[in-house]
Length: 224
Image 1: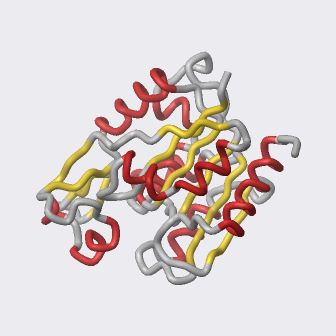
Image 2: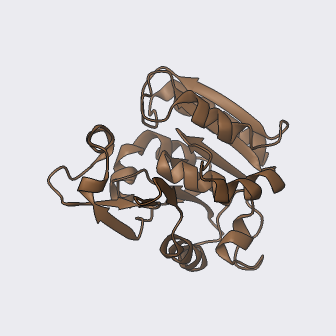
């Protein structure tokens, strides 16, 4: 069976757009025998609800009146939450396209990925037949959910799956403390952090991709 990786895009992106922006990254992982799957988040919200600076940084359809997102903003309480539509969508997507060996998330998609890693199967309502234990996840510009309602889940379920946390030195969207909060939600013996010199994106340079591939080989015990 082909090894599969689930790819979760960032705010205002889509699966096809994320696919196009990770060509070298994808090609390198395909070289290890993986097939990458790029779903598009099921939720659409008015573009006016997204801060202009963030929207300009990540939007793929600048003239659209809507943006695609995994997370829903709560304007009344000035917070956000993971809606049931996202949970249901990912449950069905895993059942239809999985099982997966790993999950990769970028920005908002990485925030969702990190939260799900506290108990992937239970949070998505998946059996072990539908989704065996994951081997790894990668978080690019990812963060730990801030709302208080999620803190007990993180605190009671230290993330033990092998994790790679990537941050850009010039990233002005996901601040360093947010990335570190998710990193610190993982056990010390399972987490790795990698820094690149760019901003809010997944680097495609040959040198960076080589480091990612080597990490995957180590944590999954793939032979050269």
